[in-house]
Image 1 (cartoon, rainbow, N blue to C red):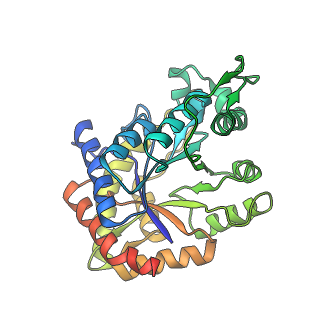
Image 2: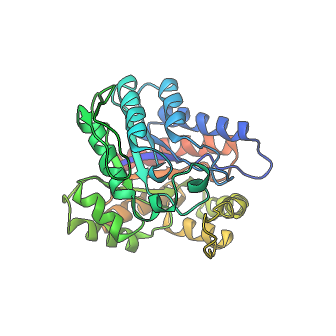
Image 3: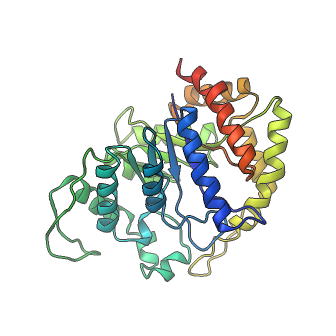
Length: 327
């Protein structure tokens, strides 16, 4: 089983952007010391849910601060940017990171980002497959030519990637799972998905793609001496982030949107993910892997928003949980 950290750069009330980003980088460095397999950064815009607008840029910085751990994006939003530009950045990090960079991509949402960056609602609603195919072409071919949405003359791709890099696709719908499967790319499943949802997505994927492509699943993780203590820590802290954070998702076209209740969502995350004693965490992850076939997890370990508690949580996960999942 592979275990990484998911670091969305969540801004809790009272924290400055500098404090959030420092906590995020510190968590990534601590994850390498603790023996995690990877760290994954998220891209968000204009919201406190996450204050990192470029997961690729933050990944580049952390590649320079670490020496062993894989560093990835979970995810870079294709609807906001030119796929060839993202491929160039990924190839660059694949080269200078000596194969440690991982590229996660997603469709994103119908958010105001599309207006700000001038890509438009159509890129979100119908352009993801075309963007993904152009990205993959730029990562695998020596030369790349334009498409209907991205018309340009054929050009060489410079630099060429060193090893790939590996590409994963965020999937929240059956259609996206099928798209990823037909291209042989593993899925990244979201934090909101319980085991039944994960299994359904994996089974749907298997109808169109490879049998064991190495899917990933995001979640939260918190270790304490008792299950009640661990759940209390997250159920107290996370709604303070989730409330204003989720409110930051603003539709570009004014479509109705019903945000999740932050307290109910925090309670759900505590129920379906490894939150409790070390024994609880091992049991939860083992059961999820057995039920779903997913054996690569990227876990948010800074759900309290407290730097000291985050460091302690990462160390305890590394010492008390990870060795038992790899034995």
